[in-house]
Image 1 (cartoon, one colour):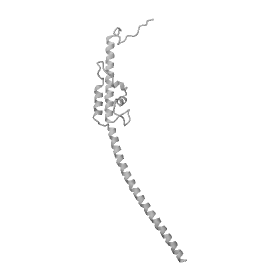
Image 2 (cartoon, helix red, strand yellow):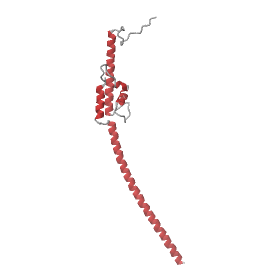
Image 3 (cartoon, one colour):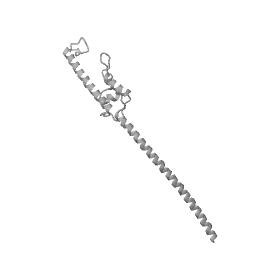
Image 4 (cartoon, one colour):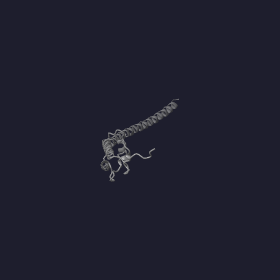
Length: 164
């Protein structure tokens, strides 16, 4: 029985054909291009507020980008053999958008909705205050009318006693 391990591209002593190594590099290059396209498309969706995976209200960060792109978050932090970030351009674009203070379209819509709801709440509270003032005024009038009625009954009782 032969106990030799299969050839490995990582072992310089292995007997892997150079064509096989070149084919692996081409496949790896294609995978990286596909991944980069997925990341760029996800970033555009995040910035436009038209996400597919994430629900509205997401934070604009690397985790959200990775989730929207359908990749692991460590993929964004992957480095090339020379030590540079593999997706530095995408990460720089994300960082510059975050640093600019721009909000995602969904967040802007939410802020506008909150402002409109606050205005509506203020109007409702003002109407409530007017209604409470009217109720208090009517209660005061009812109490005054009841007092006048008691006085009238007392006067009537006095008149009946005199009439006897």
